[in-house]
Amino acid sequence: MQSSFLNIPNGHPFPLYNLPYGVFEHKGKTSIGVAIDDYVLNLTLLEEKGLLKVEALAGKKVFNQITLNAFLATGKPCWNAVRQFLMNLLDSNTSDLRDNAALQAELLIPQSEIVMKMPVHVGGYTDFYSSIEHATNIGKLFRDPVNPLLPNWRHIPVGYDGRASAIVVSGTKIKRPKGQLKIGDDAPICAPTRQFDTEIELGFIIGTGNDLGTPVSINAAADHVFGVVMLLDWSARDIQRWEYVPLGPFLGKNFGTTISPWVVTMEALQPFCVAGPEQNPKPLLYLEKQNINFDIDLHLQIKTSKMDAYQEISHTNYKYMYWDIAQQVAHHTVNGCNLQPGDILGTGTISGPTPDSYGSLIELTWNGANAIHLNSGEERVYLADNDSMQLVAMATKGDLCIGFGSAEATVLPAIDS
Ligand code: CA
View (cartoon, protein in one colour):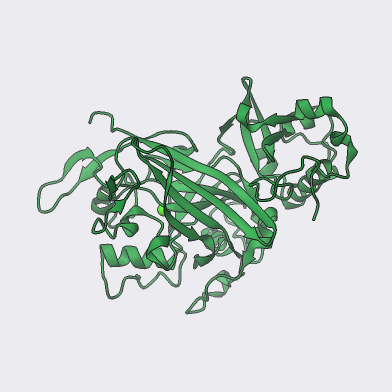
């Protein structure tokens, strides 16, 4: 395997093989870069200097932007050509940057000096409900302990249109939402949520879109996807429970969704591809299984205002997901719906088979029956004001490991509580 002249230690989340893309601010200027070791390689400056020599781009400038959308629109052959160019530029056997200390000082910026921004402009956001473990748990808690899955669930990758404008980058604080709550037999009230939850998800970022009226076939679906971020789907369970019938989630969800700033490319994920669970009954032909699940470990952590360090409360894996990203893209577009560069497709809560791998507080506490005991001596059923949540992810295979960074946010008190 190629190695970088930066001598990156084993186990570092950003080895040469990873090269996740992000948008960052440094000394008041917004630029696009890839993470490598503890640095970001400034692609905006690389392109500006005429040093990004990638034939597939045909002279087109794509990194003189404040989001990745223009690069996403160039398509998979371009993404791969740029990746190959960058891997070669940073390779220990390539002298251009390795032996030019002045250029290195310009192009490689310590991550400690930058502030990460939203990586893409999100025009559309869809959240799926594709973990059979999660759908079963929620079905048991909300509806029917005996037949928790609705009749459509094994036939359709169920999803809903979410709120693109409420997606924010890691570090943005989230205010406790207010809304209608219906408690017991009392009349509904408007009050801050008492059941502030979050869900472990990944967000797939669409690279190339499709025209309105032109579905994406299941065989071509994966080629439309550029990469993956971590996603925390903040959820007000009491608002959700009262509002969700018959049209699904609305104000219980659209007050904020956190994503991690580094976009890990589909290309970097290829070594971690696994088959995923068997699907029974067999899906319709337009959803024919492509076996492109990924072995990605996800850890959810909490830190209250009384804690000095994060404490893990769940450890799950994306490989359990019943419906995969190709099936989600094919289903999303089967009616002719048009996906666009920068759209985000949330996987849905990623719950595993055991209670310590459940992907939300409502499942981890079994609807409040089992409080979570924290190192500080505190207990949590749902989130309190000033609690912080962090999601971290890593994919590992033999000596190869790639990280996703972190998606993190703190809960602020409601506006007038
Ligand atoms: Ca969700």
